Image 1 (cartoon, one colour):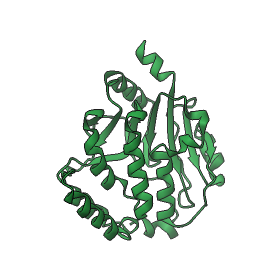
Image 2 (cartoon, one colour):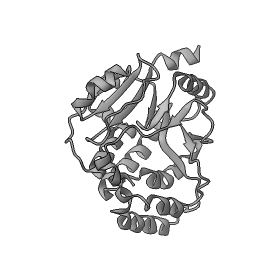
Image 3 (cartoon, helix red, strand yellow):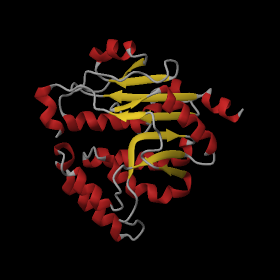
Image 4 (spheres, helix red, strand yellow):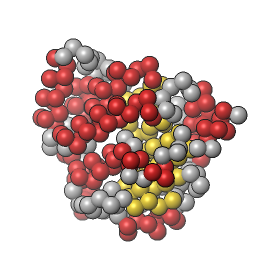
Amino acid sequence: MLLYIYMNNLLIVSCIFGKHFTYVHQSPDNENSYFFTNNNELKDEITNKGWNYVYVNKVLSNDSIISALQSKYIKFLQFLDDFPQFQTAKTIIYFDHSQNVSSQAIDEMKLLINKNLDKSLIIRQERKNGNNIYHEVEEASKQQRYAKNMNITKQFIKNILLTKEYNENVRICATGLLIFINRENIKELLNNVYEKCIEHQQPQCQIYWSIFSQKYRNKIKEIKWTHFKNIKRKDPIISRQRAERFT
């Protein structure tokens, strides 16, 4: 019965911002799945793949940093303040548009949620065995859109570690899939990560997550990257002219 109650208030969300991507993966659940975008040219692609289309009034840009930062508005649930029709959802499953999530994977998540109703969030550990914030910085710096403002991010890390309230040695988790069970308990965490991404113009949110989440360990269930067998990570089609911006 608990499973039915929670899943009856389920919201599944994903998003694309900007002009770079033109392909959307099939919706895992036609009824409860909502795809957010500021690119109205994607409407047919979104609805044809079984999603409910939601337009977000944000500037449409070719800039990969701007578009990536806009997506954090969905990922960290900031959109709920502006879209009150979704505020009644008890459980929210977010995944990046690169994640090809099947209906079978959603069923797996429902079972896992029901086993972790005492937690506020379920998140996967990164596929690589990253156990240090600076390892994540090093990996992120290989990509142009992350590297551009990384000096600001590194200074922030240095300063916050000096407070001795946080540890640089922490298991790195992947924010590409977030399963929110009780978002109110971690609202400050979500806000902190989102605000630092915007303040530093840094789309690599996993760095900030690895810091701020340390104070919420008892509220977060970490699982292995391979826990869900029915998820494939495949980047949707991107135009060749713009591809170099994402390398």
